[in-house]
Amino acid sequence: MKNQLLIAGGILAALSVVFGAFAAHWLKAHISAVNLQNFDTAVHYQMYHALAILFLATLSEKFHIKLFRLAFYAFFTGIIFFSGSIYLLATREVTGLQLSWIGPVTPVGGLLFITGWVLLIFTALRIPAKPDNLVG
Image (cartoon, rainbow, N blue to C red; front, side):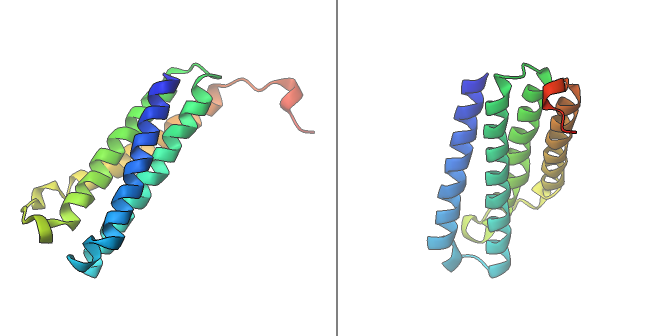
């Protein structure tokens, strides 16, 4: 699973950089400032959660807990729904696509992000504390 997480996280992080560069160098001249800001928000959230997936990869080998896989799916699907829907909505001026129906998908992606973080919290609660790691 570690390799899958590293590959997925790496691809998503790289795409975030590509989308950010695309916005900064071409898209800014073709869409409104508000849509550019929305696109930038999607880029940031994609990067944050790509890094979260890479974080999961570093822990997945040490702690073989099913919740890591569920957190990965939540983050990955959240990126598709949240960032993906914002990318499509923000670029309607250049694509000409009428995708107003996709707006409700964005908050579902946000809920998936929250779900992924909550799953990480539950994972931490399931990992037994070692007496030598306690401070005090």
